[in-house]
Image (cartoon, rainbow, N blue to C red; front, side, top):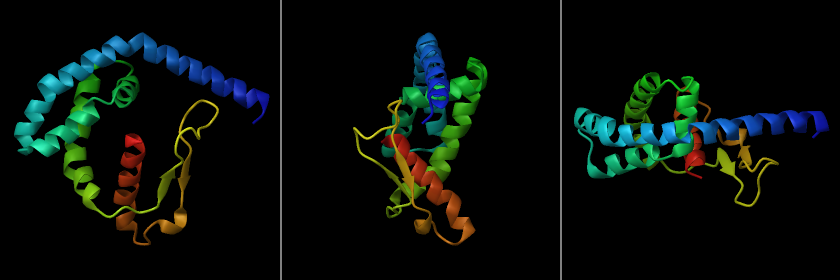
Length: 151
């Protein structure tokens, strides 16, 4: 990696860390609202059982994910709340059923301590393992990305 590329990546990394630290209180407050107020409404709306509620709550407790969603909405709480609610409903309806599928080797994350220069996991995508039918491609990738998020 060239010094110029490395310095740009380092500057981007430093900016992200600064944004994260500067907005951590907002992220934690948003998470509390999501878990205390939004999750119960979604639970009732979708008639979710205990295991599904726990799965949804685990995702809402992922501080990095909630930070990225808040950042996507320029740290505007109301927009992020609505977005997270929509994503949560989508995850329960579309992603949760995929988790019972057999594991494929499409995406592999190297185990710690293997990481890039900024501490992020190294991911290998094995294209030969992708299903040929295009309708199967999206769910396979959704599942692989969720497994990566859990890593």
